[in-house]
Amino acid sequence: MTRQSGVTLVEMLVAIALGSAVALLITNMYITSSRTYTDQNRIIDAQRGGRISLEVLSRDLRHAGLDPLRTANAGFEVADADRVRVTMDLNLDGDVADVGEQITFRRFGDALQKGTGNVGVESWRTLAGNLSTFRVDYFGESNAAIA
View (cartoon, rainbow, N blue to C red):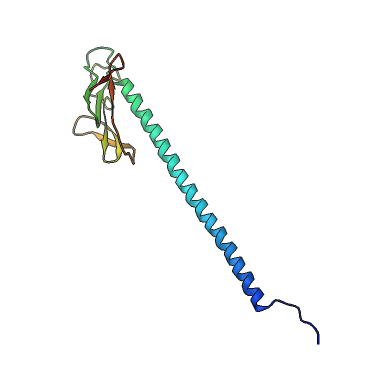
């Protein structure tokens, strides 16, 4: 009788089980890596949005009160913990009635928004979302906090 070579049923079942375990581990690693990649992109987008929002906010607040002709009465109109409204004479025409010369920043729900235009008819744009807090602190010339 000749000896037959081959694989027994038990050996085949063990090989299938090991192959399945390896495939499951590789799939699990892929899913975890994909989730990590997605989460990191969300964090990067949030940081980018925060940086851009702070740049817009600081640029506009630096222009607050721009009134070289001293006829526009430009400056801070409202300044409280949740909202800042400023005016500026950007086109140097002596008033603050033109588009973009009246700006309000506010916290609306969990978003930081920028509004341009007259009070009550502002055009609002969301600068950043998912805010947990938004607070504006004010300081005088001597860097002392103003209530």
